[in-house]
Image (cartoon, rainbow, N blue to C red; front, side, top):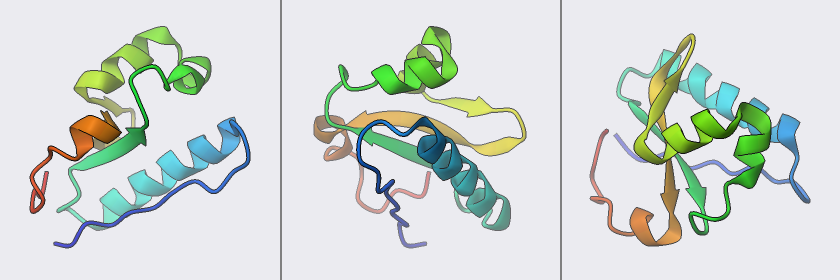
Length: 93
C-alpha cells in the first residue's frame, strides 16, 4: 500500500475544516482495510491547542499516544515534524 497524504488548506485555525478532514479520513479507512492509522502532523508538541479547543483536553492528550473515535476504525495519532521523520518508511500501520 502506498501512503496517502492529504492536508487541510485553510488560513488560520478552521475547526470545521479539521473536523471534515478527520471525517474524510474515517471514510477512506472504511473503504480500505489496510488503513490502520491516521497521522495528524503538527510542527511541535506545543502546536496542538486547536485540537484541545475542538475535542477537549483529555482527547488532545490521548492523541499523543493514539486514540480512536466512535464509528471510526483507524487510530488517530499526533506526530511532530521530528517524530514523523523517524517512522518506518514502509510501515502499513
